Image (cartoon, rainbow, N blue to C red; front, side):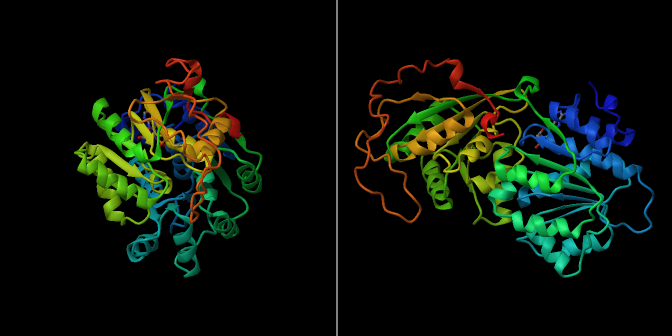
Length: 428
Ligand code: AMP
């Protein structure tokens, strides 16, 4: 299978070869033909699968085949949940359209709108946007969406998690009824299906299945550990493993800052990335992480969304997410580009319910290990701590307290059950 055989035009093939891509990824091979045929597409794919090129390349092909426009109305709209993802998708649009007569722009909140408005006023064909700023500029009469031909909803599940449903519904009213729709999502909850049903018109459904994907072999492991010993354990794992590029997830911004400081005190270069950090600080942290000057990037779920970091060997959940789907997003950061990845989770007693929810979602139990000196606290409560609530004492015992041996029984290191392919099997 080649990009040429998919029917993409010469200027696009030139840009693809400039990027160094040799063959289409599975999601590209499946999504590009129906998009080129003008069909609506519902794709199950997460970051790392090559999904961005999967919708951008055929979209640019279709736009460039259209009639020359005297003035340029916005003909394609790509909605993304975060500014990072918007910036990254736009960078891709620019690269792929280098040899085409296509103009594009990106708009997102948190920065001055003036440069964005200037760019829009010059006339653009493709707009990449986050919902808030898009609605804001439309309300001000600074852009019009009534000539949109292709609408792309990227990371739709994250859009809903972030509370953008109302905004999406408003935006749908601003674009023409007759249009081509492409929707991408890593997970498929009831709400996502409902949204897909309301937006898409007889969509072709495609997915990057593990069997066809060279990307995704992920080894998952849970370290049962006392809450107070997590920092010591993570430092030990990173130092002794001599890991050079580790993405660590915390549940809160405060937790991310605190852990980052402790890492730095232990001599591990680290940076935090979360919603309270300025765009400049985030970009700097990410650049340091990519060029190797920062070994550990500590991130919250929302901040990590949309980061373009190829090839991550290690992802560590310092805390488990309370939304099980977020676990799937997090571990989807590893095992890219054909390489194997490790997704490790440090789990204390009060996260037991979260772990059970995750195992139910992924349809398998995750291998458990206990490291000497970092054992779980047998007296700790398994009651999950709700935000803003004090821990209730002594209800339930750590379900893992029976695992006093170094490794839990029934979970051999190379057990098949512990080696999971990166797929959210139960969520569809
Ligand atoms: P995405 O899932 O769109 O975020 O893409 C993940 C990474 O894969 C990005 O760094 C892309 O540049 C890269 N990529 C996309 N398509 C291909 C391909 N066909 N061959 C090699 N790398 C690719």
